[in-house]
Figure 1: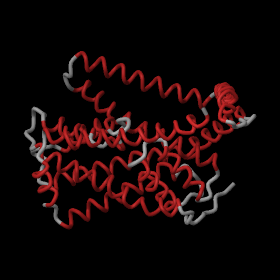
Figure 2: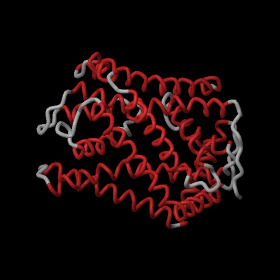
Figure 3: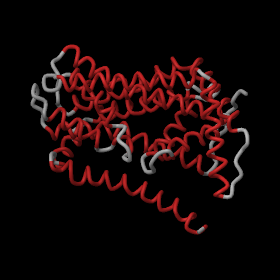
Length: 348
């Protein structure tokens, strides 16, 4: 029995790694070739001028610095470069191994830089909430605007009301959990009871102070939000501004002008693609985001867009805003794995 329990996590981890790979192969190897010609896409990508490549590469690096700031600004004493290295390393892990290993990697790298565990955990959680909030609220604003100024139909209006209502309710629930210590104590007791039952099965003795730990972590979250949320939110919004600028540059660089795809339309599709970027199992919505752009712009009534050009622009954007940071992140990740990161002092 013990042997079977030891083998089970390996089987689960193998499938969790293989399934995303299979989905990516399905999307790029079968589904996308049904609508785009990879040869034409490749030719369009190769037509980029050297200065355009440099601009896109610079924007990709700037984006990674700003995106890293979402969490770095939440942790006093953590340097910009250290936070950037941790972000790149976790992004590299997330590109090949499903969540939550990317989050655990970032937490581990923060600890390697001398950040205390509570501060690191609070920074990761609050920063993640900021990133998630922007990804959800941005497409909601586009949807609400569409309902307010357009004629989307009764179904879209109903969906908008339901989704906005759910978002407001979720925000209220999170605010309530942070506002009331009693809820944190209840949650801590629930965690303690679960640990008391499960951990002995695996031969481990649970801690006896999980209620106090939960309350302490909740207090850390409240302090983190109270002191640093404006900066973190600003970085979260700024990161998407840089990404969108990169998207505009990618489209314009391959010859898709404003007369074909207006910037406002591109912004609306980008906002919707943020939801696709949260597609489970595939890293950064790989494949799903591309399909959103191809479907939205290739079937828009008011414009006639070459689907291959759309695919080329989106692939270019993916290269400089995902592949490039992932490749750069190999360096700090390997250094961390080998224990070679330089520690920084963190105030108590």
